[in-house]
Every structure is written in C-alpha cells, then in structure tokens.
Amino acid sequence: PGLRDTLSHPRRFRAAASRLARLRLAKVNGARDQVQVHRVVQALTRSRLERDRPDGFRAYLSAVENLLAASNPGNPDRAANDIAYDLSLQHLESDRGFFETNNEALRRLIIDQVRRLHLRGGHAEAMRFGQDALEVWRNHLGHDDLQVLSLAVEVAIAMRWDGHAANAADLIRKTLRLLKYRYGDEHEVTLLCANTQGADLRTRSQFEEALDQDLDLLPKFERVFGVDHDRTMNVRNNLAADYRRLGRFREALEIDRRTYQDRSDILGPNDLRTLTSYDAVARDLRGLGRYQESLDIAREVMKGFGAAGGRENLDLLNARKGFAAALRKVGYPWEALQESEEVVQRYRDYLGPEHTYTLRAAANLINDRRAVGYLASAEELAAEVLDRCREAGFPFDLGYGTMVNLASVLREDGRVEEALRVDSQGWRGLAAEYGDLHPFTLEAGINYASDLAACDDYPAAVQIGQETLEKCRSSLGENHPDTLMAAVNLAIDQAALGNTAESDQLLAEVLRRYEDTLTTEHPEALAAARRTRLTAEIEPY
Image (tube, rainbow, N blue to C red; front, side):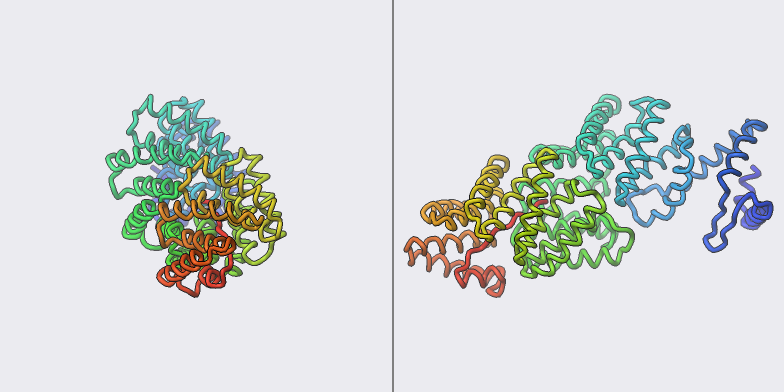
C-alpha cells in the first residue's frame, strides 16, 4: 500500500526520489527522467530487507515483478514499442534472479523480450538471454510447460538467425513434438512452432516440404488467429516464399500483393512488416522479368525504410540486396556494385562471413563485379562462397547457383574449358534438385550453351540452345527476358553454323519482343541488336 500511494501521486514520488538523492541512496537524472540506484546500495538493501523483514522482502519483490510485467506493451513485433522494452530489459539483464519468478505475466515479458531482440537483429543477444532463461525455467517448471515451450520457439528462431541452423532445427523438432502431445495440433503455440519449422525446411532447401507444410498451416491459422491477424499474414508471407523458391513467381506475386495490401491497410505503409512484403513483391516481379517495375518498387521500399528510421536490421539489408539486383537488371551496373559491396560488408559485420544470408548476398555480388569487368575479384569471391558452402554442408541452391555465376566470370576471362566444367556441374546439380523447368536450371542451361559455343562446339551449343529455349517458352513465357536471352544466343550460334535465314528470323522476332517488354534501349536489347552474346545470372534467394 505505501508503495502504491507513492507511485500513484507524482508529488509524493518526486519528493521520495529527491530524498533518496539527498541521502545519496539514488541518483536522479532530471534530463532523462530516471532514478538510478547503485548496485552496492541495491545489494545491501535487498540482503538487509530479506534478513530483517522477510515478509516485507517478499512483498516488495512481488511488487517489482508486477511493475516489470505491467510495463510489457504486449506486442514485441511493433518497433514503436522498443523504448518500453529497452527500459525493462535493463532490469531483466542486470538481475537474472527474475528468471526464477512465479509471475506468469513477467515470464510473458521475458518471452516477448527474446522475440523482440531477434526481430530487431539482436540474434546473439536473444539467443544468450533466452537460453539462460530456458535452462532455469525447465528446471523450475518442467520441459512441457507451455511458457517453457513458447520460449523455446523464440530461442530456436534466434539460433537459426545467428547461424546455428542445425541446433535450431533440433530444438524446434523436440518442441513441436511436446506441443502436439501436450496441447494439440491447433494450439496457438503449436501453430507458431510449426510455422517456424517451415523456415528450417527452407534453410535446408527442402522447398517442396515447406510448401506442403505451409499450405496445411494456413487454414489452421485462419481458424485460430483470424484471416487478418499478423501471425496469419506471416504464414501467407512464408507460403509466397515457398512458391518463389520453387520458381512459381506468379503464385508468389499474387500472395505477396495481398499480404502487402493487408499489412499496409492495418499496420501502415512504413511498418517494417509492410515494407518486407513490398520488397517480396519487387522480388517476384524480378523473377517474372518485369525489371523496371521491380526497381520502382525497390526504390519505394528503400524510401520507406528511411522514413521508418530505427536501427539497422535484416529486413533492411535484404531489401538493399534486392535493390542492388534490381539496379543491375535494369542496366545500372555501377550503382548496383556500390550497393552490393556495402550490403555484403554489413552482412559480414552483422552475421559473420559464413552465415547463409551473407553468402547469398556475396553470390549476388559476383554478378555485380563481373558486370563491370572486375573479373579477378569476382572469381576470388566466388571461390570463397563455394568454400564456405562446402564447409556448411553445401546448400544446393546456393552452391550450384554460385557455380553458374563463377562460370560466367571464367568464360568472360577466356578460360572457356574451366567455365564449361563448372557450368556443367552447376547445371546438372540444379536440374537434379529443382527439375528442368526451374528458372535457375534454365539460366544455367543458357550459359552452358555459351560455354559450348566458346569452345567452338556449335552443333552442341545449338542443340542445348534449342532445348533450353523451348523449356523457357513453356515455363517462363515467350516474353520473359531469359527466354529472349536464350533466343538471342541461339540466333548467334545458328549464324555460326551457316543457318543465316533461321538466325535472322529468330533475332528479328526477339528484337520485336524487346520493344514490348524491356524496350529497345535496355542493355540486353542493345547487345542483341549487335549480335552480342548474353549472360544469364542467378540471384540466390
């Protein structure tokens, strides 16, 4: 009661704070409106109170826990709540005794803190803080307590972001088994854990399995959380990511556009989640060959992140990576290179050189360096990415995609036999994992035909070129830039074999299609008009 009276009346509170400051038991910072108590004073007060007035000690400890719990804004996903979370985090980190609390609301705050930290990019901090709490809670509450399992889900997410994918997958698998057994398939926490498992499947390049799981989860989330709940929109976002990784960009675009519009209406256009969805729309458009639309949206995404402010995070870095790719695709290679170089360095500083996100950004940078003629540094970077892929267990989409990009560097450097060997391995690897009609496989096939032509094996180049062109038309459509690229290169190879009429007819058709798509002023269209061979690029996800 005495504490409640003091905290409820501003004048009493100020008088108490001033008296503490006069007695040098506390420091009052008027500018920041903070009262700080030295750790020695804290320790002496606690120990004396616990010894002389145990009932009072327990009452005050309960009051402190209630105050901390009541400070929880209740939504760690919203960046606007960071100031409140930062204040309570100082207390939780300075006294790990709070981990032993019996206050469920305070434990909820601890769970939210772990989620908030990894959402803002503090993956290592979230993992350490969460693991410490998880160990105490398991001993105190048991392994199958609902809050213990909720915390385990957030710790696993932090682990995965911090590069501990195998440990994260193992924790999620064990947690999901307990949740299903103890609380059922459609409990909120069970669904959240299952959704996290989908991310682990994507990390391991098990895209079909991830798609099947997310298709199964979406109606469950809609029933349990509601159609417009942010958790449900997260599942839709993941579903679009599954389609995108499988090369099904039209389906991905349809879902991403809906999610972007819903998030914009509910959260506002500059919310980080809204911007992430808009960035996904830009990525889908790039996959569909609509490069200028993709760049226009990518610019808007970058402006939105600037307007939103706040600390740097992975969503911003991913958006910058996509912005660089869009710049290169439209025909601004130098601007793309500058952006990509900065992004890769930030990833290295942020996540480390071996993290999957860093390696995917680096694989994209290979294309940027090659595009401006920096062949030696592009080759060096490709070798580094491949070495780290092998050390990490070789994620096939990234490893094989990097091989294709490396082969382009080797071919441009005149080392055509090496390029042929590397491209062959990358192309066949992508075909085995993705199938013949995936965009990555088609891009690798386009470049493999270029290797054959560079080795003066024009009959084989024409055969591969014709097969790849038909597959591009079937999978990507007649007007996709990769389809046009395959046709340009085939026309060049036909001419080399003396099939002038077929070559001229094919090239004329391609140039007409460029007028209706990228425009005749696009670098690829200008190169096609000069009968200059084009190079396909793989942009790892």
